Image 1 (cartoon, rainbow, N blue to C red):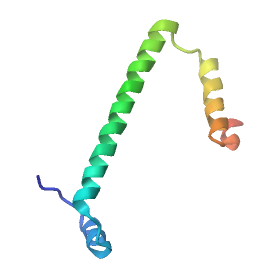
Image 2 (image 1 turned 90 degrees about the vertical axis):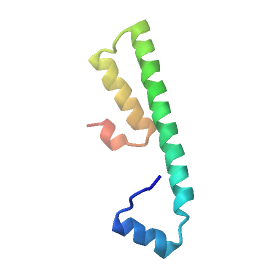
Image 3 (image 1 turned 45 degrees about the horizontal axis):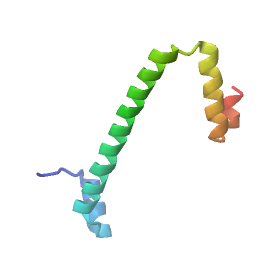
Length: 79
């Protein structure tokens, strides 16, 4: 397999002596896990919606505000 690196990224790899192959392997594993987790989340949400129904706009807004508060984004929750 050949992998293309833009010139600026190639220079960084060379300048910093980065292990390109190891970094690529790690990045691919991380991305594969991320995609599997997103897929599992979508499946779970579909099952949950089938079981309890779609949230109302009010429930969705309440959930959004809660997420922002938990994430420490009080300024956005008040908007």
